[in-house]
Amino acid sequence: MSITRRTIIAAGSVAAAGGAAPASATPLLGIDASGLGLKPDSALDQTQALQRAIDRAAQARTVLILPPGTYRAAGLRLPPYAKIAGTRGASRIVLAQAASLFTGDNAAGIDLTGLVIDGAKLKPQQGRALVHLTDGQDLRLTDCTIVNAGRNAISLERCSGVVAGCTIEDAGDGALFAIDSTGLRIAGNVIRRSGNNGVQVWRSTFGNDGTIVTDNRIEDTRADSGGDGPYGNAISVFRAGNVMVRGNRIDGCAFSAVRGNSASNIQIADNVCTRMSEVGIYSEFSFEGAVITGNTVDGATIGISVTNFDVGGRLAVVQGNLIRNLLPTGNGNGIGIGIAADSVVTGNVIETAPTAGVEVGYGPYLRDVIVSDNVIRGVGVGVAVSVVPGSGSALIADNLIADAKNGAVVGMEWDKRVTGDMTKDGAGKYAHVTLSGNRVR
Image 1 (tube, one colour):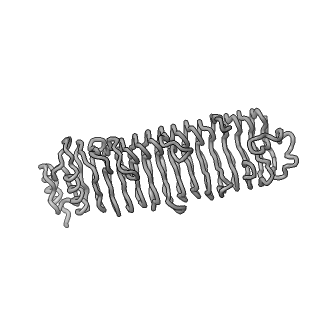
Image 2: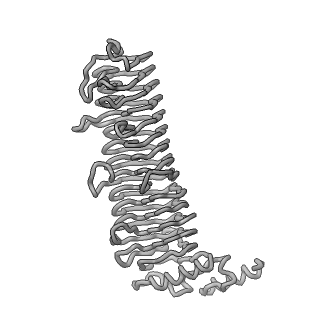
Image 3: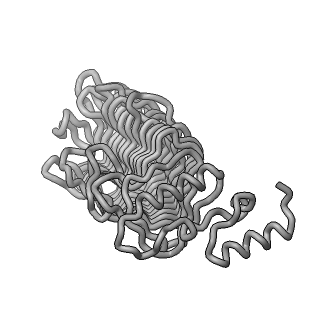
């Protein structure tokens, strides 16, 4: 079609008159849903009319424009290239029955923007979300508000694309569940009061994922389903390799701010994490490779834990983090950083850790760890290092340790202190421990 000033003015005149633009003009302006039988603020279920409008716009490869108002619907199917745009904060679709509001299979090119999607606390069948998309490429969910989901607010299976600038509040389960992603970016969203998890980046089997989770604000994440860690995390990464978690502001978690479980090559950087009820930042179980740098952790039982060498957890850099106000529990936590194998802990500042600033190894699960150039103050033990037979090498050098009530560097057999302060007495018979240049006061 030849685009001229005449065609643009003609299409605009039709829209202003309250009708739909002619087919030749729809690619320019989109389709106004009110011209297709949709009635804002009607008490009636408008699923059929809205589905017809979605299908027509998708077939024309153009945008369905949803005017301000409230629309009741359920079970809407998004075909490939479905695009719906509302007036931000004013175009509201309310779930009319216990089902997903939007579903899409083989959902390439779907674009939802400016919508309020209200789940009305209704629960779809188990495993289904309020917005549930599968096998979608180049998805875009932007500037939407998603509230009152009975289960997960958004589920994306084997999808690529962007979820950005959305507000997700009061999800019954998770705010955003992404599994087996193929190139996903989750950026600049606000997530509040999730029932179980905030953002979940999971895979059904170990593998490359590459999702980027950046610049989100996640607050007050609960663990309504209980358990000892699968729920209650602001950001949960499971089996997904090469994931970046960067620049997020996280406050108030039943468990962890960021929990990487069997997530190799994870990068957790520049997050500000406050008020965690368990470990602030976790890299655990059978991972290989974690870079944890530039984070602030204020208020947790353990600041940063890089563990489970017994099942293959190894290879980490923990650098330049600020960790403070660790809380003891009945399990003897109150530890700044826990580290196990093939790792460097350097340049961190740790203050107020009632048990230990840094715990190096646990039992025989210690190998090739360097702890250097850290500032550790106001702690029970500065650096607690395992001296159980079979423990591997540890180099503890050039740290500044102040106000360590139970010793600057102390040998441990599991949870029991078995040496005095090694910075005064030397490593003695524990040849796997090397001390150098630590300053203690």
